[in-house]
Image (tube, rainbow, N blue to C red; front, side, top):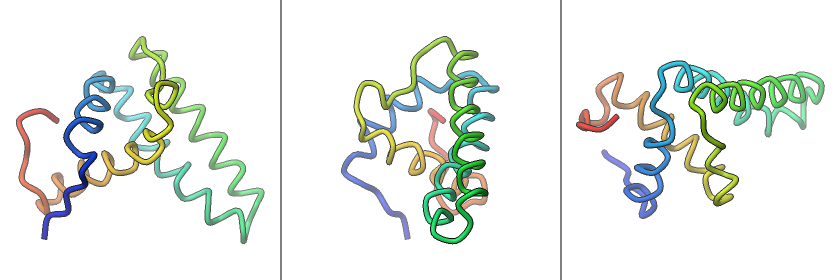
Length: 104
């Protein structure tokens, strides 16, 4: 079953356009899950959560320094949710749960 959000095309396409450099993609591949996992972890292991959160954001800013642009959430806070969705789509395509698109 393919899940498509209404925001999928315009926001995710813009997000993808700002994340083209392979090192930026790698930084996001690692950093976005770290940040996402840190939120619920704050209730159980706040020190680990804080470490994941800070390290994840460092990776995001390093990736954008390499890419040469600012993080998308500076333009619109909704991109806080687009980043995890973009990552889920990439992983789903990689394992064959979603068809491969021509513009990754």
